[in-house]
Length: 299
Length: 273
Image: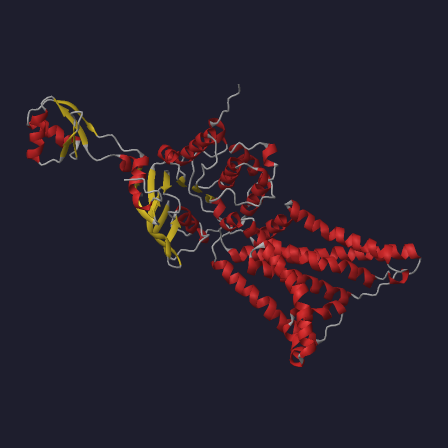
């Protein structure tokens, strides 16, 4: 489990990360969302000890990353797939990591197979890699030590659709087998498909967090009745705020249970009673980060 | 049409259940040193830089045999000829061992696998030291072969006019040059910047200080104590008095130890981007 508590990072007068707290639970995929420059990468870099926090703590299973005796064996990290010595071959980069962690040599070939890099590609120097290949290599480095926690910054960047599907299945399987995954992305569809929990950050602050189901569930109920005026007056007397839609349905903040009981008591026959459609992740994201968007398109 | 099968391969190599596993042992320093040594050789640039130690030694030896008068083919002259390219190549190796982590951004991986940056830099220091000493041993072997070859060609007896002590002092001088490069790498953390600084230090600074010493008597007296390069000259002359050692220690503290300590303190606190 990853626990971030009251994390703040300031650069001179600029606050990049402002009192951020969240957890990423074991066995779940936690999506870390936010517009460009919201503080996602800074938070992840603080988590793995590359950037010192101004105040606050970030721990993994109760320990700071920098206290781990051999972090690669416990936590797989991919922050920037392009941050590699361009003159090394893919295989050599994995070999250096394998030796540092003290793993058997065979592990390098295993992860190369896992991320579907061929022998010919592994023998190529990284300067000749496409972004997608770098991303696969970075994921291979993260998975090399057989860690139980994965911390990935924009792992889907540069992957083709098949690659994205592959990564999604890999991470899903990984979490289902008990691993912890924290991944940041601005590719909302990816996050929506893969994440169990969401943490949304904007301007360095957490603007929403919770399970995906919770966050995407919309408030309210849609109800229809043959005798709409009776329904409306019953709701008025019960004090439920409501709107009558042009299509004839009534939208209310009350739960389906409250509306159902009300209709029963008032002896009104309902023709439809359901939860309102959930807003998509995109609407939620734009709404939550509206005041932090550069374009100001939201709201 | 072929179809790429994506799913099955992903799960086979991984264990069925992922458990929290605490890595028991700290990564030993010897392993980090071995990895850092490997990283000095495993790129094309790194490989040729290392190979250039041998190539430059052989070329210098061959040039001496080809162009120098017969009576000059002494071991001392071979040492000097081989030593000249070494004083350039070794500091470059020292610089790049450190700066490539920042210039190539591989530090992002290095420092997440080993969060203790002092240990990584300590390992790099030891690795650079090993390379420096081995390079000088290679120079010794090439110089010896050159002297023997020279004597075979000229028919004169080989002249072994360098004592063990003198050779040890030359090794020390060359290694100090290399470590100076290492220090610049730590302080500047940028390959071109550190390399330019090294050449400013070795090529631009000495004549300026020389001019100052000629015109200002107070500086002429002070120079051996504050000019690190000047204080190293006796190392290559083969005679070190106790005053020379003191001058080397004082100037070395100013030009090497203090900047190195400041650089290390900054690296420990800096952000790795």
